[in-house]
Amino acid sequence: MHNTEELTDRPQSEQVVAPVRHHAHHRLGRSAVAVGALSLLLLVALGRLFDADQWLTHPGFRAWQTICVAIAVQALPFLLLGTVISGAVNAFVPAHAFSRILPRNPALAVPVASAAGVVLPGCECASVPVAGSLIRRGVTPAAAFAFLLSAPAVNPIVLASTAVAFPGSPEMVAARLTASLATSAAMGWMWLKLGRSDWLRMPPRHTGHKDGHSRWEEFRLGFQHDFLHAGGFLVLGAMAAATFNVTVPRSVLETFSGSAWLSVLFLAGLAVVLAVCSEADAFVAASLTGFSPTARLAFMVVGPMVDLKLIALQAGTFGRAFAVRFSTATAVTAVVCSALTGWWLL
Image 1 (spheres, rainbow, N blue to C red):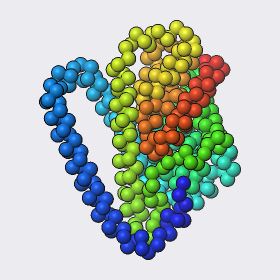
Image 2: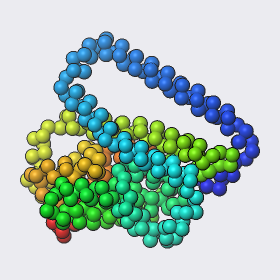
Image 3: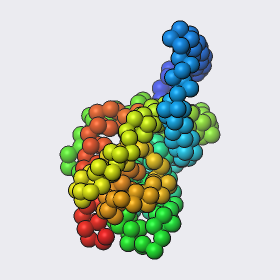
Image 4: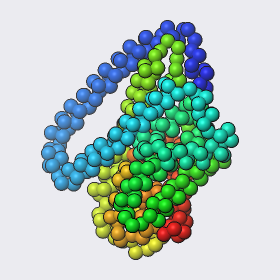
């Protein structure tokens, strides 16, 4: 993590070369557009060469295309919201504000950050850039990660959608809230105990307000960086999720529904690959009537914390080494918390 004072107190020589960097970024942007256009033309040429019209019009490819676009479009508004918040935090919120809100003891800051997700609407796509911005502003990573996991799982919109999807079952709403808060807090404390700072490989980015720049300019630059960077990984995650939806037959779902433990593990894995937005996953879980309530609870707890698009976003924001370790540990913790909560409340 970069030191805020080092980033804000720039030498005069660096301020002089800022216009040069600005023009370099413009040239890089034009080059990227040119490469993208050439790549598109190459794909069209290869398609004509290998007679791609048949598989482009195949029902399976059409279904894959529809699911991929649907996931990306569904998540895009929340990613946009998250990057707007991230840019605003970076430009307008003083670094010392977070140290005043959160307890100084990191172990106490974790449950406070986890509980903050209850009052802040957001999706998993929005929570990743916000968590990255919080870390850049000096918040302990354990608290930022607890917020990252809790915000998309226990915010008011998600709890309301769960109540609508499971009418007459307030225990399901309570179980989702309990299991999600327990998972996020446990992962925050686990990072305090076992996490290492060298696992984080956050991309270099200006943090904080610089002299000579308006805060609105700082907001624009931060928003532009986070949105473009995370958007590419969102598309990759959507493509992976669509591939699973198309290639795995429905008969596989029925095979696992008969076993209590296998059904929990299967729906937890299904939540990872389906990559359904947390505001809509309760309706998917409610439609899986052949599975036990605890299995469906695991689907709703794991999904907002570990899915393909979220793993891709974490890899782009914090680094691949972090994403692999953190996602694996989160999935195991979420399954355990779901099983225990389901045994207790359901």
